[in-house]
Amino acid sequence: TPETDNYNHLIDCYGQSGQMTLALQVANRMREAGISWNQITYLKLIKAVVASGQVELALRLLTRMRSDGVRPGAPHYTCAFIGLAREGYYEDASRVFQRLVELGGAKDPFAWNMMMAIECRRGDMDAAMEVLESMKEAGWPPNITSYSIMLEGYTGISDWPSALALRDTVLDLRQSLIRIAKDPVATEAAASAAKLELNLTATWTKVYHLLVDAAVYNAEWTRGVAFIEELTELGLPVNYYKHARLLQDVSSSARHLAAQGDQEFVYPDWNTEPESAKVQLRAQRRWSSQVPNVQKGIVAGAQGRVLESERQEASLLLPPHVFSASFYPSWLDGADGEMEEHLDLKLWKSCRKQIQNASKEASHQVSPRTGHEILYVYHHATVHRRPLVSVSLPPSRPLIGRTLPESLETLRELFETTGWPGQSGAVYVFMRPGAAKLDAFLAMLAAAAAYPEDVFLLRSEDPGDAANLALECRERKCRSMSFFLSSTLKHLPAAVLVNRRFLVANSSDVIKTKCGHFEESFRRALVHQPIPGEMQVVPDEGPDEEDPDEEEKKKERGDAASVWVSWLRRNRLHQMIRYDGNNLRLDGVMHRPALSKGESFRARAQKGGEVSVDLALPEMPDEDGPGSFLAWF
Image (cartoon, rainbow, N blue to C red; front, side, top):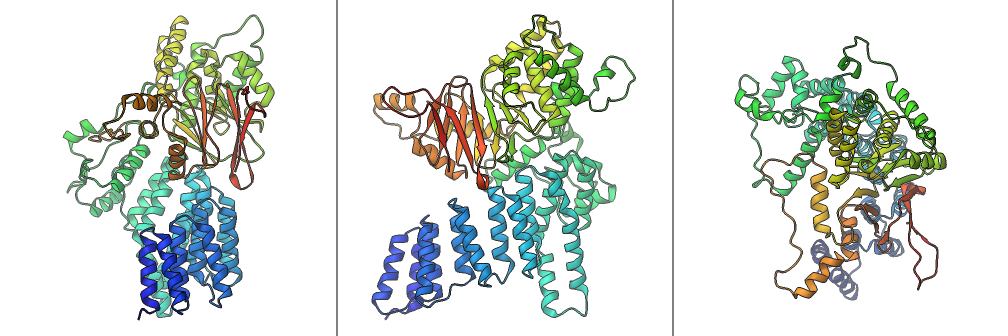
């Protein structure tokens, strides 16, 4: 006769294979046989429904569990709120977690860390910090996993100062663990727990690598070098691919320690690497692309130096705009003056005055020298910005996306209506900056340099934009600036991610482009230079033999809306807006696609970090309703 353990094992097998219905059928047969469900049975059932995405059944099972006289434990609540958060029900997940805390079931750091990770994934770092403080008040000191989660959250929203502020806390934690592990008076259990946490090499390494990333992106190169030295002194491994430039600046003793960690560095073969390693390689390439002239890798042999034959192939070409920004403009003129203080604000003030006077007949043109100064300050204000820019949008500020070719007149009308940058007005995303007039483009660069968190310029896929700007530069007899502007356009960010939920990007034809083609081109746009040996494969869109007429219709209409919804869910996005030079397309997991020929869109943050998007749509003759489309969650 089957016993409880037999049924539980069968439920677990069905649940892990995604067959939730069969798992529930086995549980019902268990009851029919007169065998009561125990804590393990309920846990296996909750895992099964969560794995199948039916998270509302997990809450019903918790209620049924209490009514049957079986007390839910920490694993039941933890599994339930993790499943709720995975499906986007963050408020319900928080309530389940609070219920667990009130019942006194959070008896180890795991549940606290999972709730912290959920808030970080959500992009709500204030809520994550509240969980961390509540964890301390409940008598559970945060461990290295807790700080690793917080660092990931801060780096995910590009809050580099907050990430760097955790460094002292992490160092204090490690020193405290070392003292406990070596203290002869400490209990055996405490010493064993301290040694166990100190042996979490992968987690400690991840924490320090995140601190190094934060230092580099926050333009604190010296601090990044100090972190590398601290990393090697602790006996933790460095990443030769990412940290090559930093290792050149560390002390010789630190380089020796780093070389001892790995006697030989072998360049990975893209064709033989697993998919998980390829994801890491892409991230490393994206990281190292932020630093000009970075070395591809260091061969740490007996002498701990780069081989001469490999050094010649290891340097990346320096883009023209980076070369231009390496020299202060007054030095190029032969002057001996030092760098002017607050040059970015001074240039923006001059450009703002030019914008305000745009309606007058005598329009003053930006001089070549001022143009070089604007390129200089823009590069140094955004040099550490990644191709995918993360923006934390507060509810008090809207985000304005612009697609029309800007001129000084359109910029004046925009800023006078919605607020000037730097005055707590809107956050601006210009999706086609290259299509603007030269003076307007330089004004946008100046605004982005003075207020890099208020103004964002995106890379366009239209090669004609750069050509028009270059032609206008040459008409002003400033040929050199045309090269620097073209290079700047090619290295602008590819997309903006708002509150980790709403993606803003340029694209090719938004109507006909397949989801697989967009994903492949978008992935390439996030990596300035492809990894050597990587094959750029576009996923197959279907069987080879199809009706020619049907295939032609598919090309005309692109993928179905459900395909884009699946792609958004897979990438943990709620909405995405794309622009192809003619049309704006808004896709979302909770609404049908919307298409507009409008020149702008507006996004606003709602409670909990959600984003609502306002997109102007044409009135349909056979439909009633407003001429604007509002999508919310």
